[in-house]
Length: 183
Image 1 (cartoon, rainbow, N blue to C red):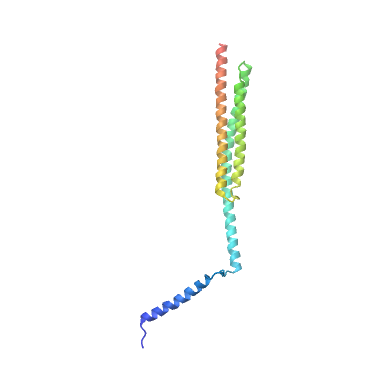
Image 2 (cartoon, rainbow, N blue to C red):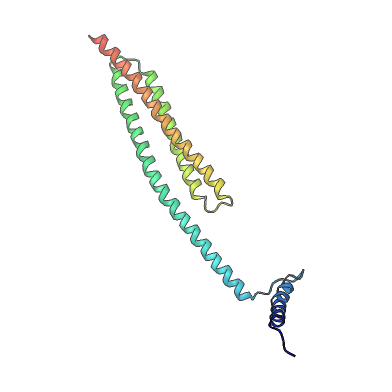
């Protein structure tokens, strides 16, 4: 009796299917956990921990660089505004000695100083919030909150500059009035 090749191929396919399907089906038995060696789990856990620490360190480094750049720009702008406030206050004092009413200018300059101080405080808080992002459970929400705080700080600088500009215009009007009265 001679065997047909189709029968041999079919029998071979059934045997291979049994060899592959039976172990796979055994893994799917309810209540039976897959067999893993503790060494493999420890190795995977250690590798995952090292990768997570490396990612967090990279994120902290990136945040530190971004904060350094941001602080450099913010401090430069705040220093410029602070210097200009002091210069305008000195000019207002001279105009006051010349007989001009500079009470409106000084009150506006005080408001500008207050806005500048509030902006500096908001920037410091934003820096702390950015530094806390890697440790946060919801990094995206923490980053958005820090970003919003940074916007608040920038808005404070813009407000301080606008108040300074208003004080300069008031002082200019006073000085122009003094010059007209002197002639």
